[in-house]
Image 1: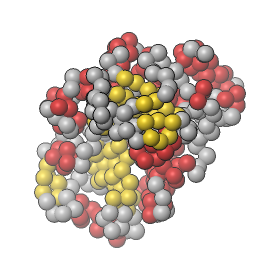
Image 2: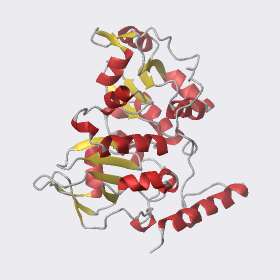
Image 3: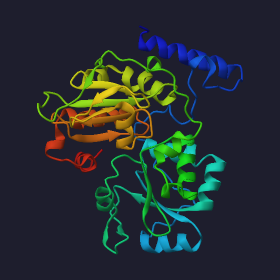
Image 4: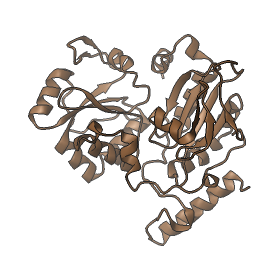
Length: 348
């Protein structure tokens, strides 16, 4: 069995060789991964506060008025929840909206109203209720910033993105809403029809010593476990998975924390048999579909009784993952089930 760090180094060296030669990186080449920009960055809070693009809506924070203006212009409304010093928010602005095609497409099809999740300015929500930005963000459970909620012409929610996604998935999300695909299929199914993934065998997944081997009987509904559970949903040919394993999961502090968990890894597209924490017999693929997962790696955390506590289904680095692990390991969810409210109470 190939040791995970050796496999990752081999992949990264091969990728580097291709890039140095100026050759396109092909997913099929020697079973390597597609390179997606925007995945590798320091996710600690930024010193410089974020500035919104000039084409964002002025933050008058009257959502019914903003929605009406968007519809009149033939567009949909997006409500952006962010933080001024959030590294993931900076990444969205610099990498995603920094790409001319993404900016042009977004401006042509959407109006964006920004919400500061720490803000004290008043927001008029779609029901006409006036609350602060912070209370609105808490109510909407935008646990990970940036979060973007897309509303169609009727005011119905068309899509919700929780966290940062690299340009490929972000472009797909914009097209998914703008072209009305959300009316006919899930975002997961829409992405699966695309060419963004070439899945190899489960042996191509990154391995970690703390992953438990099959069979995957995760049932906690009758006999509670003594430890929380984390399920890693991954896939072959996954650059984001390689980055997670080669960076955050390579840190001693993170590895020590995972020793306190029951941890399993599932190929999101496989027929591997699984008994879920609630006791249902299914497969990894069907369970991922039921959960609505479309991004890899996704980490789902469950308590000792099999109740889902939190999921991280977007790009995650050391700082964000450490905060999540601290929340779960300390059992803070027993006193504060809302992760974002817990973060607010700790002022970070």
